Length: 486
Image (cartoon, rainbow, N blue to C red; front, side):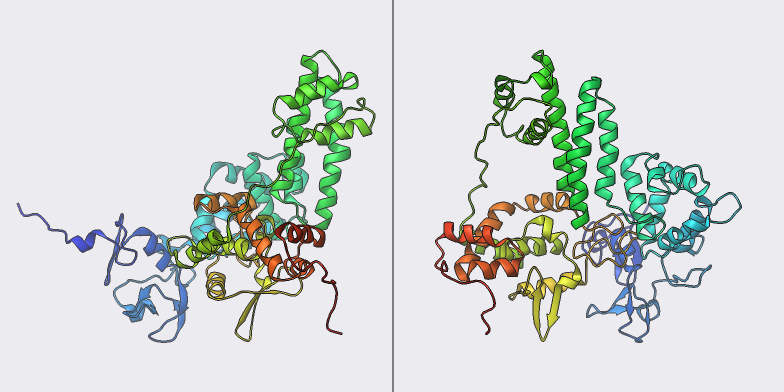
């Protein structure tokens, strides 16, 4: 019996050189599943015939080719809509398959899509990568929630959505409904906190404790969050702090109960014992205790204070070494390198970096600027080229969540940017010291220019920047801020 010999080069993908699994054979060689799928999602102008269409093929010089010019790739025209795309089932493209499924899920019982949900239907079926929509809409809990909304089993309101489960999936669906215009805009982080708060307070067994916590949450925490939401979208860090404040308030009341005291009978010894168990971990209890003293729910006690200064910054030599790595390390995703560059060059926190939009990147007369304050800050070479390259390959823009997003770092939720909590682990994985990197960057900047100028350009607070300049030994102490052009 003869055996078929497999050439060594056939074991690897012809494009990415990774080990091929479930490969497809094209004239250039075998393609792995990932490269095959990416090729059938690539559109543009064919280098051979100049027609704007599907360009899955590659020329010898790396230019994109259509199926006719590449030859031997096969046909990818949908038998239902006539568009060129990857065919998922019986010669039908993914968009048509997704539209068929959505018709069934959003049916209001009359064999037609509920009129109020038509914007959602159009948003989902027009995504450039329908495979994600097919996977999402195939999940049992997604189908259950969509059918409940379509058939009126749950009111099509923010309050109605709060009745659905699981909460993470409902939050994603809520973002889609707001982005498509089905629901009015609302701060998603505030809604998630309110839902969490109701569930958390329901677990407090002591009625007196629950009443105190409800007052604390309504008159302090939620009031603060609403004020912040009026100024701009809440961040995950802000609601995380609010949840921790509730957690610690519950734990503090339990601590008093174990000592046989109510909040109104709290003594200085009770407070000192509480903080002695771990000051740093319990520091956020300050918020509840101060509120309780102001509202006369407990007697006045002295809250202990300890220094929580930032860690020591890295050296300028280490900062320059990291900047060189960001330029030369092609194995690091470009998205992470751009974010790290904004930290090292402009001392920006992740909470501000994730809120930047593509409109904040200006390319005029061959110069690249980033708008952090007034005036925009110049981006030096070679970081300017790296930033422009990234604009053309931002992630999370091929699904229904952020197809037209203006965010510099689009997130996975509809209309939302990437969160600082999602970006921080990516930079830590690279061994990138975010906070020490910010500290050394701002110290170097205030040594090169007056602190008021740096504050305006970076959008920082003037007093904070001036204090850093004094600590760094800056020589611009007598600089007068303001307009010096006259």
